[in-house]
Length: 108
Image (cartoon, rainbow, N blue to C red; front, side):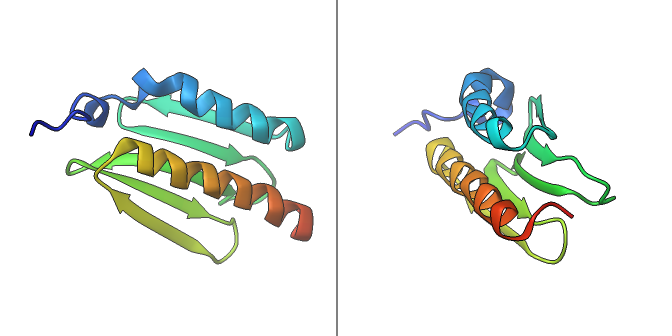
């Protein structure tokens, strides 16, 4: 059976609308958020005085989607997926985690 996601793995910018939908949810509460989408990387960053700010991203490497969460302080998580929809689901969960954690602890 052919891999139906082969095109997705070479160009995340083709899924820009999916990332913008998640981004606008974050942007409503965290106005300092920014979105960056390229062919092999999509990320949402919460800009602050921190030189290494809160960030979630999806990177395409070796035909897998790597979803990365960085809390801006000490916690780094990442997961690898073969399927774009599963990776996007984790990306969305990480975006929810950003909102919860910034409400609890603030932005540093």
